[in-house]
Image (cartoon, rainbow, N blue to C red; front, side, top):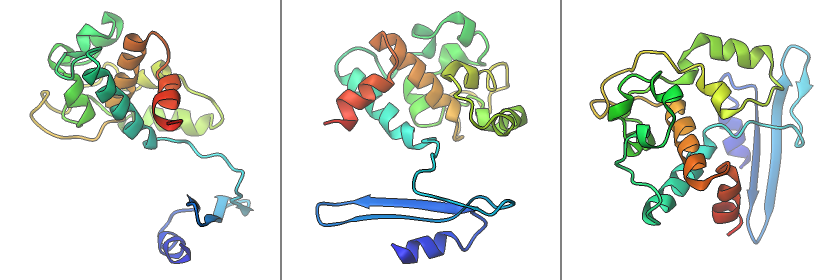
Length: 183
């Protein structure tokens, strides 16, 4: 694990936290800085955003809902999301849940909006709601017509989470915990 940490820190990444838990041993290492300018070292209790790690859980829960008959992967997003959202997404009436999960929807990625990063860095402790983050992708042109290309888009999974909220009747995080993480 030390070799992995050393390799990762050879590029321009400011720090790394690595935790591995097995029945035989546990490794928890941190190296680097949370703030280079102030030379504040990264510690084990510093918080990290889960970010794209949540995509696996959202996809898994979406597939569970599909196999339980609670949604269909080939339904369009207009079936589950309100017009106040879908009217602001180009080609919404053609975009399926399946396309969002495999990044072939063409939906604009929130992270490609410079205003998103300015807002994130401008207020790093703010806890953003899904709909607040979504605003950075709405009213933006699609990258391509649904199903005709591939582009990684965090917005795909934001929307999939909102669809899960509709299907479940509550925020999907509760079911990620009870149906995936705890078992």
